[in-house]
Image 1 (cartoon, chains in turn red, orange):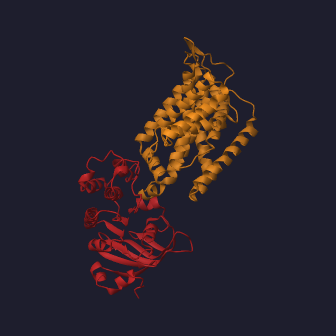
Image 2 (tube, rainbow over the protein chains, first blue to last red):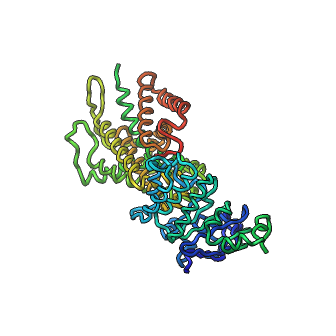
Image 3 (cartoon, each protein chain N blue to C red):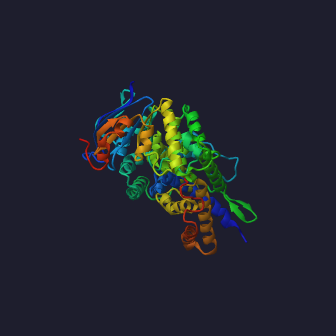
Length: 240
Length: 304
């Protein structure tokens, strides 16, 4: 199966010469969910931001559908089929739910994924009738769902989500993860960064454990769950 | 009791609102107070002065159907071109000064730099045109008189055109995709980029619009009084007072704020004397901010 996203020997950080991600490599196939896990400070969110184009890469390569996007600005990556949902401040609070969705579509172009986005929002009954209201009044779970829905409007090939379940109720977590699994089953590729390891591994096809900015372990969730090195990594080991 | 102060306050307030609209737009999208906005007003006034002279030679027509009107078709055409050129000037200043500071994420540095831009532009205008006041027309706009209430045709024209322009800009920003993009960038530029918006383009459009509104205010101000190097600087404090009073980021707020400041100034001049003009307006500003810190129409989290 050809990879939708290939990350090769990625080195990136917030300041040049002080990398947080140190030579990370992984790839994601179509319809696959890959989850980046690891202890605090491992570089998971930094890695996702570098793939999204929010941080410049010092070295390494990021390829989307086989094409190198390492030097592309963020908005060009979005047009190329990549969508990123940040962990916090991921909706425009002063804009209505409908306006948030509209901004997900490219300017002057059709919104190929609007149907799928609307269907995702319809899966949450509490959002019914919220269309013209400011997103300011939405709960954490509703905001997260809106942020994912807006990302779907441009019909991306790859969806990156930074800790999508952080701060959500158990019901909202299971609802959101079930929806993400459904999107993957429809062919979308997803990369998640998660602290909620057990819940994320339950919906993932592949898990990458990052430690100190590098891949320490990679494999299917069932295989990693049985690996004693996983617990050791979370307790401060290096996995070697 | 004469209501002349109300007529004067509404006309002057509308002009203040036109200037305030550009300043509030810049603040709402770029998140900094541009203290060089007054010099964009002056630049618009002087550009129209040059253009009106050029166009007037080629197009020697007058609006003779309205008695007492000194504004000519040449000046109206000069206004349109001058406003567009002021928009281009605003973009050029952003490219030269503000863009680099913005990329470093320093809004306080941008505000401080805008003081420098303000002084440099004023010096440039004064060295080019001298401090001597200029006029678009040597003729007097003879006022209409209704039972002791006076209104010069030029003042009526400026107020009507300014309000129409503000209404068009407001509706456009509310309904257009670009208006939504400006609100989104103002609220969270990083998220706007993540969503796929071309943030640089949104900033550029904001500068053009803000510059055009400032340039138009400059022509209005020049028509009603004089074209002089300090005309924009003198309007700066009333403009910001109106923008803050109405609620930063709100165009209808800028209009109401402009009217309140204009009327407070006119009433102070009428009842207390000209020396109270600025003091009363700012007392009103402080009073409103004490009661409503976000201004009359400003709500936290809501812009434009």
